[in-house]
Image: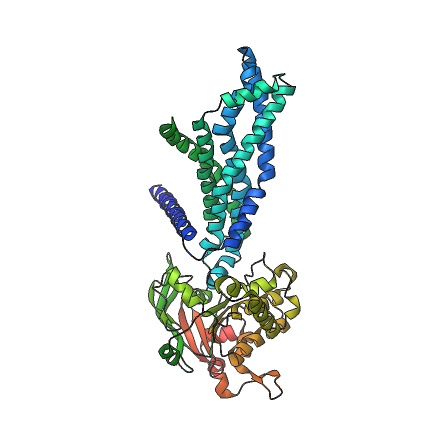
Length: 257
Length: 282
């Protein structure tokens, strides 16, 4: 029993050590040469533009359902006109970053783990090294940069369409005046909230992509291993989104409020 | 000769014809409790071929990964192209790899890139060579292996043998001094396997590339050892049986239980009365 625990602890520590090493190598790769600019542009397109549809749909329906649900509750207090305030605060501070993060974990984290995992099991990563290319610089750095910078952009998009979704429900279902909704949206927002909504996605994007890359590069065991790596990447990055969100929120509350 | 690296005149002379270009000195490696290599020592001479035989799991491919620095030995010293690689960092190894080419099992082509992008990968990405010069080199190399018309295809559109030959083209595109082949003919039919063998022979005899071939295909190993490529007066290339002296330049190594069970040329291997070798050869 003790030896089982020791083995588990050893492999967990080794996993953390390798993850930290990958992060250090990524940061070093991002600030030193060689820099694969073409791959960076390609990843910005794949991760940013490629995730737009899923983020638009998620953001829109989240805002809409939030308006529906909160409308009922607010009615009990005769506060239906404040629905805009609730939606903007919830979307911008919490739901926008977290839901965008979860969508990216599902779409980007899994994709990266599957792609890099397939490259590992077919010896393409070794082939890259044999050809004199550092896989971290060529594959990891472009993806991490794209995840780091595109997650906040996608979050802003999700927030915007979420508030629009809420507006549609507020106006056509809850019969709240459009001008009242928008003034409520603006009144409900403070500069600190905007900062919080904007800073968090940087951390979430970094976590999702580095986890996807780490899990993908440590794939073992053929196609079955690739399947396992993909599942692990989605699970780990989804949990990381929630956990990182909590810790960063805690930190930002201390710093901003 | 190589695009990527220049050696000092002294090193160039020291590593000239007849001198060692890869040296293993008592190299050992184990994964946990499983011993893969036990005090393995051998020398590859410039411009020659070393054929490494052995059963699956005998550590053949591991030797190639050690030369490339993809793995590090637990003990022993490895010299490649005048550099001691067993203690080198990944960054330092990149310079050594500039002069090495590797043909992986199954080819390991980049499946999202075309044949041209695969073959020219090293020149496109790791050198400052102009794109039109890289393209010219890619066309030249693909012509050399007889796949010029496949230049814009994707790897998934090629047969197994073609993929293996494109992998050879990719490995030779940057004109390395050493080429490593990991089971280059495994899984191929005898006719396709012979075309791959002939590419290995051509690179050795016409381009003076030193090579290490890891295989358990005895027929192919003997073919590479006992044939030579010559360029006739009319400029055409021909593969023909090599004379005894040339055949003896290709050395066989038989790995067994992590150690070397046999080292010698083709005739010595055939004449061996060792029961294990007999079983392997039969």
